[in-house]
Image 1 (cartoon, one colour):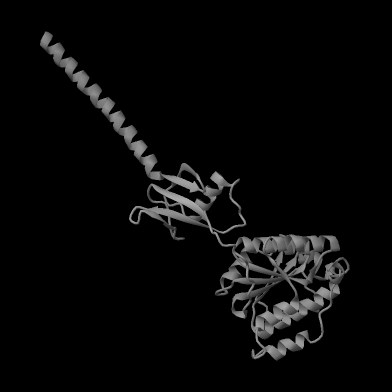
Image 2 (tube, rainbow, N blue to C red):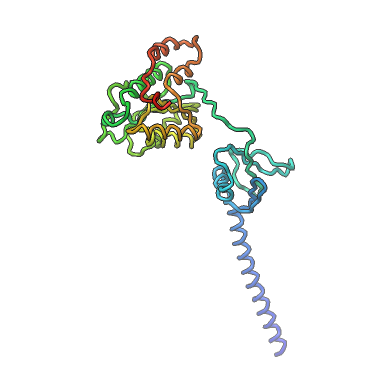
Length: 311
């Protein structure tokens, strides 16, 4: 009888061990499953290093956001940076390819480029698109120097047709504010789009830009400088495009708003320039086959649209 009791206790102990072992195995599997979804990463910037983790498959944009969340108060967002990955093979950090995704434990660092990245502002017809923003009839009595900026806008549209540059035109709530003014010839433009958003950067516009191979620069003009022009310009540079605002073909209801908006935009790295400068930069050479046609457009000086009083 004593022997039977001992055997029963041994069986119970064995079953208990199996139960506990099963629970431990389940916990281990759950832990492993959790670890498989995230990998630990060491994020370094300057003299600092902070461990964190990211889901498997996280790409370049997620890494940028993570660096900003960890070191945002110390990162100068106006500088250019490169992310580097520590390579065990080479024993040092190497530049991270844009195709990188998180697939294992790793060490990353954010490195500011030592050279100041200055926007050069070079324009070529093959890499440029023109944006004409909200030049509509109902704005005529309200916008300062509206006649002047329309006149300059027509020069720009003529130049775009001569040089084969795509043009995208927006109209702010045309049902209430009317269509683009008749003085502007929209023959051959790539897209005319109604909008209620202040920025021109809408899904339809982004799709149109994607159809233009190699586009790098946007020449932007229209109204109002401190609203739709400003918000469009900021959205465009946020997408990596170089923006040229034509000062003599953009205005607002008040000169104060116009001037302060142009100053603010210039400080963000946006190029504030003039219509004649744009057109001559696009041909770049008096031997350009279209130079004579462009010269005819600018033979008479563009109206100053109130800007000379602010120089």
